[in-house]
Amino acid sequence: MSRGLDYRANSGTPTPAILQRITKMDKSAVEDCIDTYGNLVWALAKRCTNSSKEAEDAVVKIFKEIWQCAEQYDSAKCSEEKYILKVAVRHLLRQSVLKS
Image (cartoon, rainbow, N blue to C red; front, side, top):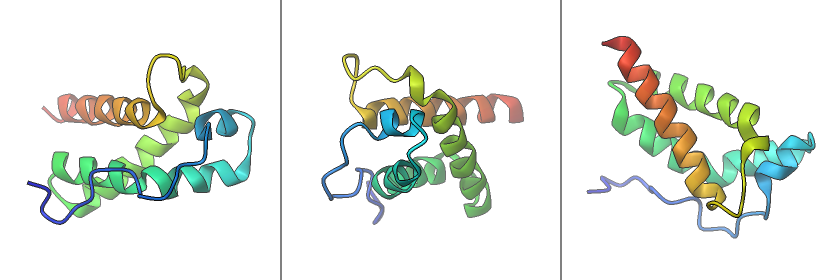
């Protein structure tokens, strides 16, 4: 099922509150977010698009969207990973609907 792709966040311990650090303009938080969740977002985008180019474009747009909505994240409602997945899935669904 995984076809060699890692659908989980990188195995390293995620830095706590990456999204909250992004809202405070912590430059290292952006890199931490990509390092921690990049494989997860890439794998999802690759499965939902028709080419690597489309997947790359989607990943860039998804991370831009994550930066823009990071302040809406509420750790009491879900984990960062689930929130990032939610942002990614919504983006990919919108992209898919717009293509139709």
